[in-house]
Image (tube, rainbow, N blue to C red; front, side, top):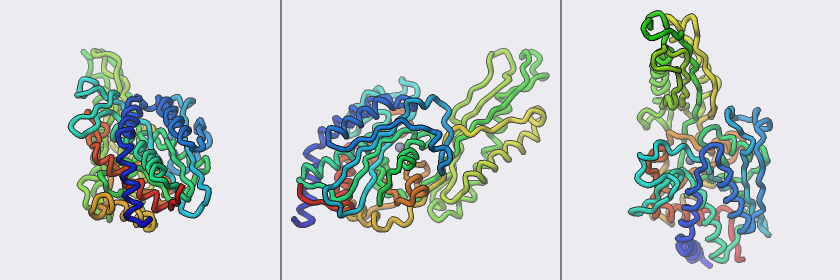
Length: 426
Ligand SMILES: [Zn+2]
C-alpha cells in the first residue's frame, strides 16, 4: 500500500466513525468533572480503554510521592479520590517510536448558569459547533485521540510501537495529574496533547503561579470607621501594587524571542475574593486568590520572591498594613513555562500529517495559557507537542468547539500516530 492509499484509508475510517465519536464526546462532556469531581470521567475513560483492549492502569494519586518533583503545586482540597487512568497499547512487533497521548478531564466551574444559552453540562450541537463546559478544553481532544487510534484499527492497521493513552486531572489548578504519570514511570519518545490550538503547534507557552493574599483589618462599627482598618480596601490597594509588578514583567517579556510579538503576555488575575462578615462592620479579613504568568526560562522561586517583595514594599507604605503585614500563600500552580525544543523529528511528522489534512503548512503559536506539556518536556526531556481543534470561550460562557475542526484534528492525529509509531497490517 502506498502512502497516499494508506492516508486515505485512515482518514476515511475517521469519517466513518465520526458520528459515534461525537456521541462519545457529548457523553464525556456531559459529566460535570470540576475539580474533585473527576471520578465519573475517569470511570468512563477506564471503560472506553478496557473495551478496546488496552491494558488499563487506574490508580489513586498519593501527593506524598509527588511533593519533591519539579513543578509540583500544593493541593488544598480533599484529594483522597484523585485518580489517574492510563491505557497502554503494546505492539506485537516493536519497531517504531513510542508515544504518550494525553488529555485532561477536569474542567473549570461553569459560573452563573443563566449566562449560558444552553446548560453547560448538556452538550449541544448548533450551527456546526458543540457547546458545553469542557467540550473545547479539552474533552473533545481526548476523545479525538481515542478515535484516531480506533481509525487505524478500522483501516486494518496496528501501530508498531508502545502507546500510553493518559487521562489526567488537575490540569486546571496544579498539574499533579500529569506529574503522577511521570512519578508512576510512564515514558515515551514523544508526548502529544490535543488541547484546542486551532490547528497550530504550540511553540512556547507561559507558566503560572497561583497565590493568595491574606489581608487583615481592624473591625469596628462602621459609624467610627475612621478608627478601624478595612481589609477589603487594603486588599484592593495591594492588587494595584501587584499590577505594577505585572507591567514590569511585561516589559521583561519584550525581550523573549517568542513572546515579544504577543501583546501583554503576562496577565495578573485576581480570580476569587472573600472577606468581611457584616455589611455594617469594617471587614477584619480579606483573601484574594490570584494567578500570574511567567515566561519559559523564568525561575519560579525568583518570581515567587518578587511577588512577596512587592506585597511587602506596598504594605510598608500603608498605615495599617505596615503594622499588620499581609501574608502570601501558594495556592496551586507553581509551573514553569515551556518552550518546545529538540522535537525536530516529531515536529516533522506532525507537519506532514498537517499538510495532508489541511493542505497548508503548519503554523506555530506562542500560548498565553499553560498546558501539561511542560512536565514531559522539562521533567523527562520528552518532546511534547500541543495541537488540536478550534475552540472558543474556554473558561467562559457558551464554551464551544467547531465540529469540522475536530474531524480534521482526528485525521491529523491518526496520520501522526501511523507515521510516528509505524503501522503494519493487522
Ligand atoms: Zn486544557
